[in-house]
Amino acid sequence: MLKLSDITKSFGERCVLSGVSLSLEKGDVAVLSGMSGGGKTTLLRIAAGLEKADSGFVEKDGTVAVVFAEARLFPSVSVLENVTCVMRGDKRENAKRAEKLLSMLGLSDAKDLYPREISSGMAARVSIARALAYDADIYLLDEPLKSLDEALKMQVMQDLKEFFKTKAVLIISHDEAEAEMLATVRYRLCDSVLMKIEKDEP
Image 1 (cartoon, rainbow, N blue to C red):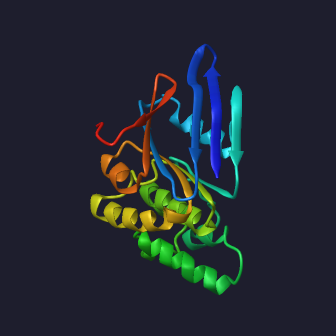
Image 2 (image 1 turned 120 degrees about the vertical axis):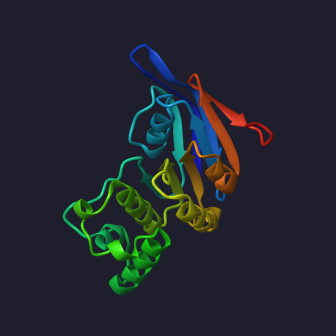
């Protein structure tokens, strides 16, 4: 569903991605870690088609949803409408499903608020709800759960694990619990090179 082939990217003299290849099929959840500023977000943006690689190819079979590290909500509509805006079909059913997603993310009481009225952490969770509401085939997520407290994070991870069973997923995360819970395969980006992390490695 998602294939990156020999991706190379430099910014000036600095190479951040060197011959990176990655293939994800339905049910694959890849968790990517690495040093800050090491090219992880650049790789995700290239996979999403938001940035152009210097060389290499990206192949995608299906729809794509992206969750950025910073929330990108529509300021003039409510939290609920920020979620339903990506949904098709019956408006009433869409609202019910959106409310269920918001509840899963601990946002039931915020559905009628506007982005300016909620915290940055809450806004990040709204972004996750909107991405899940889109029900894409491929999910690209940049540290999606970093704003959640531990109790809520564990519940959300359980729900995401079930949801991702039929998706191809690439998650940037430095959280060991997230990786253990969600990943079917783990990678580390180190000095512009993508390396697979075997299960017995830290």
